[in-house]
Length: 136
View 1 (cartoon, helix red, strand yellow):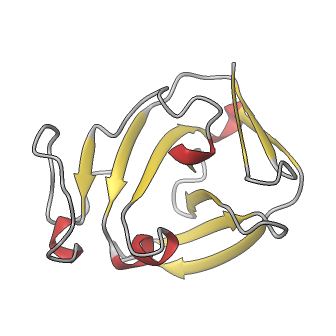
View 2 (cartoon, rainbow, N blue to C red):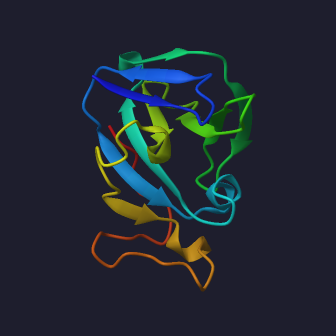
């Protein structure tokens, strides 16, 4: 069992599954969420993640063409979740929300073609210019 939460503690997650995948994303929407950097995201089965506290949601169309619902703490503003509406069985949490951010590091970096010239992109994990096939 793993835990996660926002900066102020108003939102908490309990995760009763092993992570399915983790990625760093440089798409333009993630750069906004990351304050100019990539986001680091970890995927779990949605039915194995429970939440206490309220999130505020913002829906937008990602560079992949998918409609994504992103959840934020309305008190402290912590970006916490992403869910593709076409894949409701999956939920992505920001790795920084995990109680143990070392649970799983990114296994790949996606949307490198959108990264700024100064971006630090690891050569030790696969990186892709755009979207890769979704997690099953």
